[in-house]
Image (cartoon, rainbow, N blue to C red; front, side, top):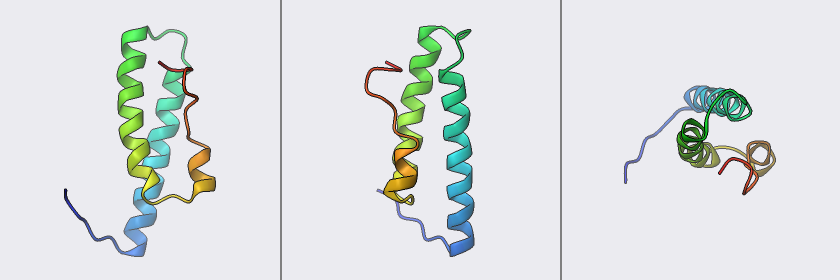
Length: 73
């Protein structure tokens, strides 16, 4: 396990970057032109980034990015 210390400004920047990445992946997951293999790869990556975001986000903000269980599998 690794640990990193962030100051307040860096934490806000990380929050912003992770939210934008999650937004982009949600758009990709809703794109009907992408096939199942690509969507499953995006879903795996989404779960990793989501767990990172969960460490710094409030439950209210986090609920916005929670995937439905069977939607993208």
